Image (cartoon, rainbow, N blue to C red; front, side, top):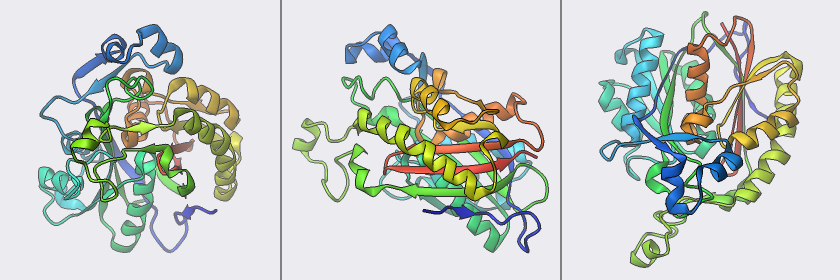
Length: 338
């Protein structure tokens, strides 16, 4: 398996760089005690299993497009651009406002970006890096600026009695503005992988064309997110280290060249095990999962934005973004901070 290469500096095409980042999480803080009570677990159990202490859940009137729009506006302000300058909006989400139209169309409308192409990308928790790759190709062909947004509202699809899932997830959105410029963090290399034979490990069984929801399906809970946590953990622990090694070799860098690791924020306890297995000797792992939970496709851009705003990155440092989740999918991006 090979990845998607973004042309290196000096190629005939312009470089693709991240011009600004932004994030948004809802105001409502949900404690472990609150989320654990219906599932029959307490704060101590949740902390021991996940190291998550709280998460944010959307208000009753908030949808995924609302979170995405807020993050997009923050990223555009950071980049210093207006909606009229956008040529594309890509929203990575597996919890869209509606089955159709794409959530990105609502974001386009909210931003007033009337002439901008808008599309959703669903690769679950790997979606943002998948969207980066797609948008990068568009920028190279058409020019202009693009918004990549990861946004999810998992609180809408969680079974409150399922302790395996309800304690993990929060809602939020993160965004990046990309453009073909010569200044700013450089998107050097991207790689995408899907293991469809494992596609049933993470799913929402009902509501699609395979199994439309009816009263029987609702009574059976088919509208809820479901995950085989043990097998998902096995996939991550067994596959991610070798995929990372192959990605870095393909990108022409050594593990010791990586200064920062920004992974999908699945479970903080699992991230510790994964980070040790990756053997990135000089890297700092960044996380937001402790206070925001697993925010799905939003977790990588939320965490990248938080680290950037804290001044964690220095010019010339290499940042490894790593997504993994439903599909089963894995995705990587190498960013050289500018």
